[in-house]
Amino acid sequence: MSFERAYNYLKQYNLESKAQQFTTSSATVALAAAALGTEEARIAKTLAFDVKGKIVLVVAAGDTKIDNKKFKQQFSAKAKMLDSTSVYKYTGYHVGGVCPFDIDTSVEIFIDDSVKRFETVFPACGSDDSAVELTIDQLYEVSKATGWVSVTLF
Image (cartoon, rainbow, N blue to C red; front, side, top):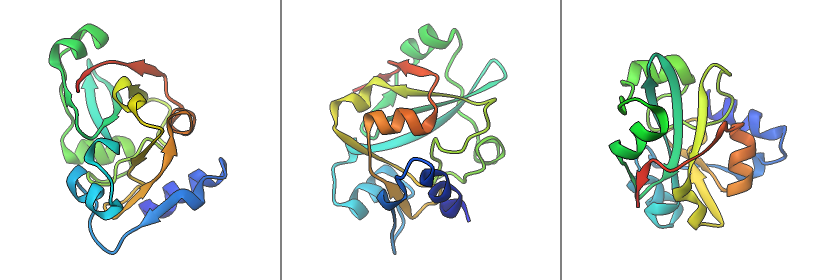
């Protein structure tokens, strides 16, 4: 059902044809890269944080790690990732399939500069066996991102 939700959301942008479902898991960066036959860096992982009681999603390249110093400078708070139950509660997607599509407007979405290295990236498409190929501009648009950040090491 989560794949269908994301797929249907992408229809309003005429991007549903870019969505893919696999016969194998794509729940981690490594698994997604293997399923797609691409490098791990091009997997756009969606990370969920609690920032002083506000839920924030950061979409970053698959080969990055959160830089706690940069995160604190950007958000004036320490990076505190949500647990899997909270991720589902605030996004409606399970860990392994979290994507920045069709997210409640109370959740802010930011795109990390690390994805700008690529023409296209592959975020999950709502389930742990899916992905969608998007240009960086498309990712920004369909996620209704609040803005760009630089909170990773790459």
